[in-house]
Image (tube, rainbow, N blue to C red; front, side, top):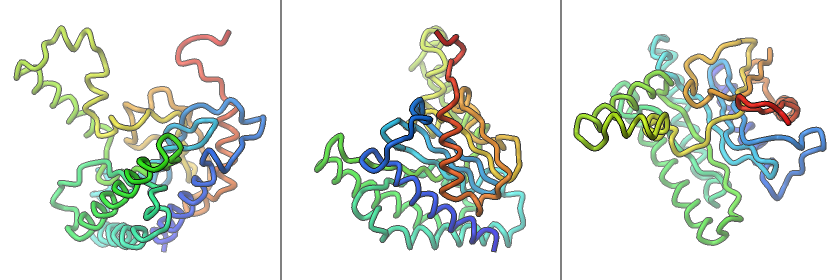
Length: 262
């Protein structure tokens, strides 16, 4: 019941986020300083809305299954992936996906043989069909396409992502593609661009539900300057009003990035 309710909340949160698209929503004055991103961290799922502009939300990441979740019972793991498969099949025919208003991106290691093949197939099909629809929408509307990208983090762990990025960087140096001096000059971007999150902006806000006050191996590299918002609400209870409250809270934050406000 808990996972099913959590899955339903995912769909409802996506619907709520669509209301924050540029043409459909005007922020109140109290939220006028809202910057570039939000991230929601839940008890079993984590949502990361990266790039919340004053004109609308463009990215949202749902933490569906972490690398640590393999420690759960086989029965629970099977239930989780069956739910993901069911949602992928149902959501593929959703008007927002068919019309290119929502693009699905998969994050994490989906080559893991422990992932049920049928769940992997349906998730990848959802990603592929949504991308095709979004490409057509971009061709038609250009910069006014107003697409919400939903990133599904499946078999994702921030430490594992940083490790694989470091391994790729080491291989580039060993092969002569880069020198240690190149890395010293270009800096941390050499790691950032090798992460599975390289194509999305860093989150500015992390929302953690269920009364927990930890990141749980979520976007550790990316969240260096994220604002952290904690709520006692359980993920299935995190509704549109709760999202709005988090956005207003975020809008009141002073973002300095190590500097000082003038």
